[in-house]
Image 1 (cartoon, chains in turn orange, purple):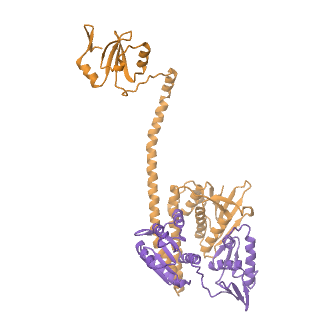
Image 2 (tube, rainbow over the protein chains, first blue to last red):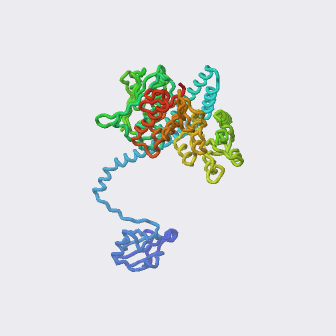
Length: 355
Length: 235
């Protein structure tokens, strides 16, 4: 207002201010108490009129014909400075005082939420990076095991060729030993690959409805056909009522788990043993699968370690326990339960609760 | 078609494995085995010759076996030829992908030669109706001829029923190994085998009566309790 001067009943704006107004494409007007325009500068044509109380109330709060305006109370009446259309968003705020008070009380909580976000976002990013790293490692292991497979195929093939064609019993025996160890290597590579995949997640677990007795017969037959040592005996014992039982599971993974248990029993009992696979039901209709041997068993401390959620084998024993780790992973992926115990004849017992 | 006339093409980029497979197949009586080390070479061989079976590695230096197969399958060089994939990838997904493309089998490396031979024989049996030519299987006093479907025992000729012959054939193909009752039932009654284990038992009894000296104490056609049956030949 101090830049507006009244000379001979005429209002005149200082040159400098007028330039500012036109530069910003603003306009201004001065209304008297009756709503008549006393003076204006750059006022758009449609606004050159007499203003009623209603008009004043409207444009004070919102817009004047879509022009955002600011109003100032001056001795002469009302000074209005308007902006170009669609330049300013205007809104009148009105709050319940109680709400404002509550908001103040909530502020610490909001602050806390912010802090949580600030802390968790970096953790999330880190986790994502770790996941990516894990993925890369899984890929890498898959690649390495892929590269081991071809040379292993050549080793196995040649060993069998020698065994099949030689006249010498000794050479034949040695060739068969190479073959046996080659097969052991194959199992290791497969387990290593599977372990890294299961640790990472293995994507979706594809399950199918499978007749359990049929699955057990097939897997144990395969194992028996591979085992030449006659001191190892396999028994399959399926409760009569469960012969037709069908469950939903991933057959390949379960076959691997069961094979690992059977191999373990064979490998840890070089003098031979009797291995019993039993499928039965308890009084609550829970289905159990037992894989038990009557061999040398393992120490109590080792059993305890095996049953821990995340067990690691003692590095000093030289055992990595990959086979049993896979058993645990596979069972956990099916949301079943697994426990390792001492068998009824002192051997090793793996007890799986299949739902 | 006879075994020695079956033309087989082995495609693998690993020279050692190629040679091993060639030697192995020759030893088994597949006398015309040829090799190729790349997709390009395989393409050249396929356009010149007619093969009864291709063993195709998945990872080749100049391309992927799956892609090669896909490209040549429909109307191409492989439209009529059975294919067995040989792969160093053991993921179920890769396996299903290979079989899904229409391949006849998918074998993971490393494999036992014995296993490979059995599976090759299975494919050729299906596609070329190639049966193992056998002179007859001597089991004690009995001479079983699968081709004729007969047992000759002490000068007497007994014929086997279709089911008995099928049963014996499967056991003979897996001689020395246990075959589960499930597998046998599936083969004898392909339309579903629910509750047919007792029928299997009956056929087995008849087969034993024709072959074994003492059917109640078999020495060749053995029962493996809880699992299945086994043909023991080595005795």
